[in-house]
Image (tube, rainbow, N blue to C red):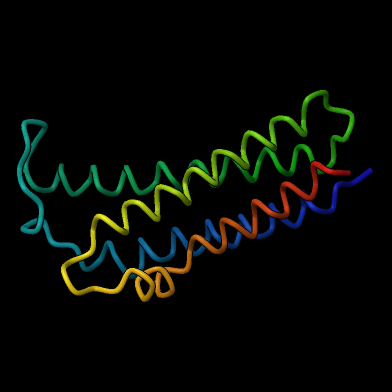
Length: 140
């Protein structure tokens, strides 16, 4: 039996990771200059810039791992504890959303609107849609 909810969550996640990679590689990375990064004990400015890219793609790996597990559980309803693993993924992604809200709040400049910032940076909505679909899939 196919778990349609997990499949839909995987499709949402695939769209999200595509947007995540595209945003960085096309919009952000080309505009970053080495001069905007400080040298560190690990290397010069270009090394620090490379760390920024690496950290960005840690999140990409989280998306890809989630997609892989969701697809595995979509077609493997006989897997013991599959729903528990998906529930743990739900908690993980909810914690990501909480982190987004906290980091956004502490990153605002005086006079900036928190609500406008969160509406403009809508990525958290995609995560919540995926989590809702994942949770629904665990209730079957």
